[in-house]
Amino acid sequence: MRRRPAALTALPVLTALTAALLTGCGSDPEPDPLRGQQWALDALKLPGAWKTSKGDDTVIAVVDTGVDPGHPDLKGRLVDGYDFVDGDDDPKDLNGHGTHVSGIAAAHTDNGVGIAGGAPGARIMPVRVLGADGSGSDANITKGIVWAAQHGADVINLSLGESGLMARLLQGGVLNQAISAADAAGAVVVAAAGNDATLLQPYKVATPVLVVNAADAQGRPASFTNFGAQDAVAAPGVDILSTLPTYTSKETLKNTTGYGKLSGTSMAAPYVSAVAALLHHQGLSPAEIRQTIRSTAKNPANAPKLGLGNVDAAAAVKAAADKK
Image (cartoon, rainbow, N blue to C red; front, top):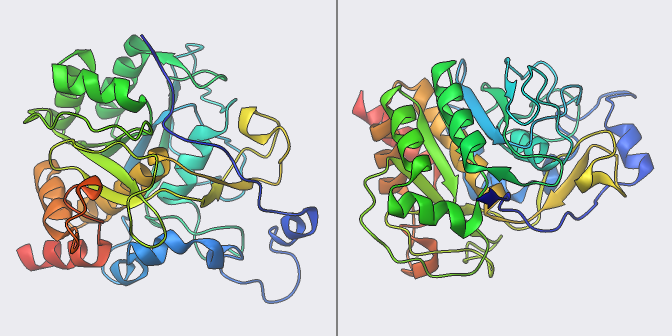
């Protein structure tokens, strides 16, 4: 079965002049010139969490379409990955989706260029399992998950599959087995819920995976988000600014500035992966990371589409510190 990433349409946000300013040229560059457009970092209370943990020495595997290895906000943030589409060691992103997800999770921060990443101290492991058109096979996705866990990933982000992936998880298919194997190897797995605005039967899922729904800037459920997965949480997923390839790809046909906005549960998942990286740095196990993120999520209005609620990074990091 073919899978596609759980993201919606790209929204170009930069002019050529703005892009030129992102190089850090000129006097007194701001720590991250586009930080003001990253509403999601504040919604997640990540700046407060960074006072305790930035996810140092944590590896987040982005099992996706690959990455732009030369992007100025990602270069130096990457560890060795693999390309299961072409079968080589060069997981270059020919779509754009994986680069966007990677920037959300762990772009360079306070470097005078572009944006800030959710886990400023973490590294990205690009694992390419989806082609230039954004589709891929269960076999390659399964191989990618297992390979990432075997090669040192501490967090594995799955921003793909839409409702098809969730169905596989609920039915105990091959992806279920791969995720269970990754958990046993010590990696916490985070998966996007999908963008079909569909209520999924909330089975009691034995698979050790943290499912993420999408919320908007007001903390309300995104109109497109799937919901209903047991113990799912929510994170920002609407008009999310992040890195895009600096060359022509599917997502950059009209925008090669290196930055742009996408919407989808694909964008929500890597924010939660970033929070997981902060907790990993604090010494928590995969099970403890899932429990801490879930128990500190906030849903005061009991909105069903938010699951357990919106993730609160500062509360999660504090709870982790209190466990010590």
